[in-house]
Length: 101
Image (cartoon, rainbow, N blue to C red; front, side):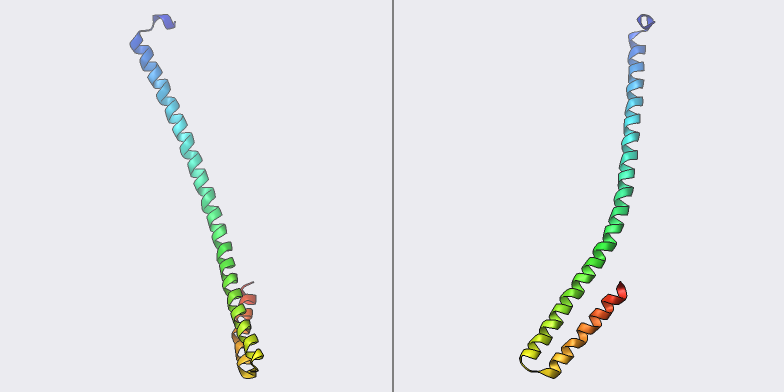
């Protein structure tokens, strides 16, 4: 059967098979890239929320440390009113952090 076909017909058939394989592989690649993109979008959204909360917690922790160091320094120098005033931001930051949880 294959002995009776012309060279032109054989080459055209081979071209058609190769084009079909190329389309199949390309479509499979595009589908895989789209699925990977969707998974990365979901992962980015999840990590963005978590990292946002982590950054906020870190900022609050640094503020509390600074307020505590000012209060300790005021206590060391026996500036009682300044020490009590330094505790104000500390309390506000703690209440803000507890409200977020």
